Image 1: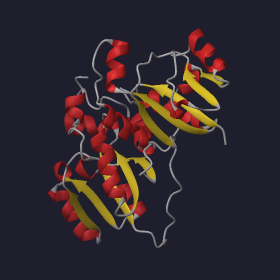
Image 2: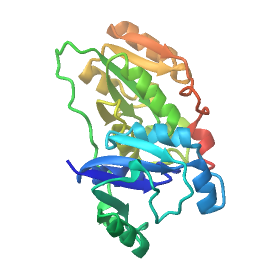
Image 3: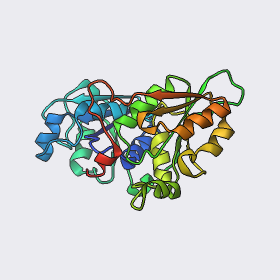
Image 4: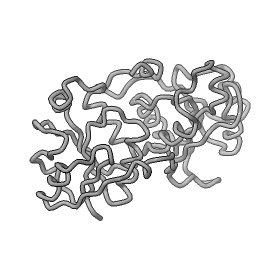
Length: 273
């Protein structure tokens, strides 16, 4: 399989970057090469929004990426570093990043070069893993939430929950989030939030809730019949506990904590980025 290189800061890992990596993965095994914090400062004149350790964790969490690394060399956006990690059969870039210098750089290194057009990055094609069959011996875990601004805290929550069973993620529908949180919510549409969740390698399947209130995912729970309902401390609600007690579902509350070495994140804080 061709080794595909995608080279960027990945400092604002939202759906468009995920879509680029997803489309690149159709061409081969994707290696993401991230600019270091120092390189971002040299190339842009300002510090990155997110530190390199956090950016690397986010990129590595995506099912479209085989491997990822950070380059610490003095570089520019259109010239690859002299590093084994920059070796590839194909350099894939977005239409916005395409440049004559990039094309020349790829040619000088004997690499093929492919530009993914902006129109090909439209939409949110969900990439779920195969759903767990009913009656299978694998335990199933179920989480719900708004997940309105994809961040490392969400990934960590999914990572921990997936350690308890095949993970189903149900994102709140737009109408119910407006009901619970008020106008201005959600920031991202239900389709985009579902796409972001489905892009994380720890997630077996991502769905959109069809109910209302704090138990908006009740219809999905009754269909999937998970073994566990997993929440973090912020998501712990008496209604959820009682529902699980009556339904014979194990209720698990995880401590909300970032991945070791990473800063804590909340969607509320990130709305200001």
